[in-house]
Length: 389
Image (tube, rainbow, N blue to C red; front, side, top):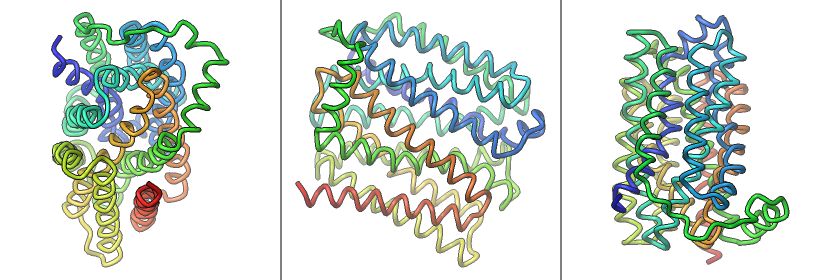
């Protein structure tokens, strides 16, 4: 398999979470009615998935350094497959949440391995550019997943969404047969507790890795917050759900593609960190414009969608470049570095978003104000890093 196809496959692996999350968004209202539960609990199907994905990465990262990327991918995708089947037949919200955790645990292997495989192949600016390329491919999920989910739910019901995800996992397993093993030197002691503690200390002692791991949790909070809050906001404020909501929401995936195409050029032109600062400034501008429009009573589904699309051009620029800044100094333990990065960002953001969803509910001004606060912290952290360096 050629390098470009390996990067493309890694991009599809990265998209497994966006498919698994975004494909369910148009069906939230139907799931609430069908399972006889509260909207907040259905929203937690996102955070429960992300918590499973975050915790799973701690195991899969070290396992991939010990056994290789391919065996870990095969195991994780199989677990994701089983979680999807369980969710398709879940009879209660509790069982659905448990199956979402199982899906997240399995998807964690794809998240870790995709970043580790790219780090095995590239370093420096080449690493950042290829992570940006993989992230652009990842944007296929946000573009098509809501539309696909709405279509499947309309034709056959929301449970068939999870059956479709199980077919997706099976397809990734078939392609895995052609993927070469990229780990050159397995680490026999990678799964020992002592080594785990040493490697964790190594990453948090490294100023660059520590700074951008913590930053990744902040910027992922903005992404996850949008995913969790927008279905409810579009329904309560604009009366839009199902296929109509999916059509509006799909536009933000186009923003991701535009942003990552620009990111690859910006990395060459101004450098990785300056590209992140420019992107963070766009995030602040989009969130501030959203809050201003809401307070002025000038918000509607088209304006909201346009601002979320503008936001989408930049949040993954910050997030994917932060991954490059964390992984680059640790090529010898790429699997573990990718896992700790993913764990920190996903668990931190999941806890924060669970609290924000409960506090803000369907308040549009609260949503926009919280989003603006997150973006201001992101920009401040990047400017502080540039001043120090």
